[in-house]
Image (cartoon, rainbow, N blue to C red; front, side):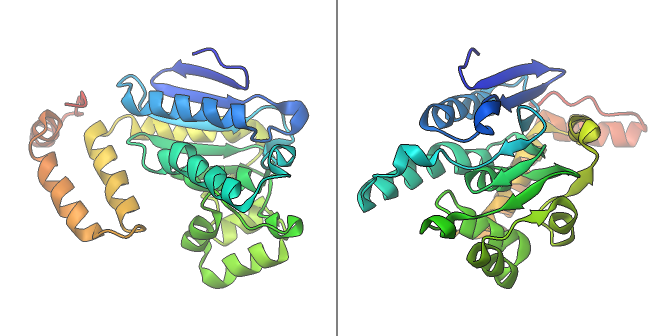
Length: 259
């Protein structure tokens, strides 16, 4: 996978994605979003990939927003299309991926950058990180799912406060309100993400995917309980279920294969 704006590597069943536009604080331009869409699709269909760590290059920014210059002259219709394509191909694609995505937030996560982190299933922030949705300072609102996902994570009152004031929060405050799962010193950031994925890698891959699908269903306009019931039933048809039960009975570690 050769990209102009991303550095990607698969190592020990983990796909590492680094947004590599450090001089622009890793801002999301069209080309970067196109490349992200491609690598997200790759992760979903590649059995070797058991989880994904998404981060930004350097020590200043995860992603400091979208590239405003690209859409400064857009019409309303063009703005709608920008949001729809971004949501469908990148942000929703991450959330709906069968592979677990962890955002390793290594600095500023602002605007589209915070929306990208919120689309991931788990967020870990370095202790120097600052997070916010400053779109109203430009006369805009978040357009990549930010109004929805921030509300899901922190509740209506806090979400409206953060969006309406455009104030940033520190990593410690973000953890306190449920916006991130963990805060660690910056040198430990990737290691913490790997620690979580190394535990996940020991579990049944199809069950992990089914669990993600069921949790996400609870947030969308579908019957999450029905999704869970169906996914639960399908797990009984997998070789991994039989292996898990046999390993439990035989008091040994299960060897899951994703089948």
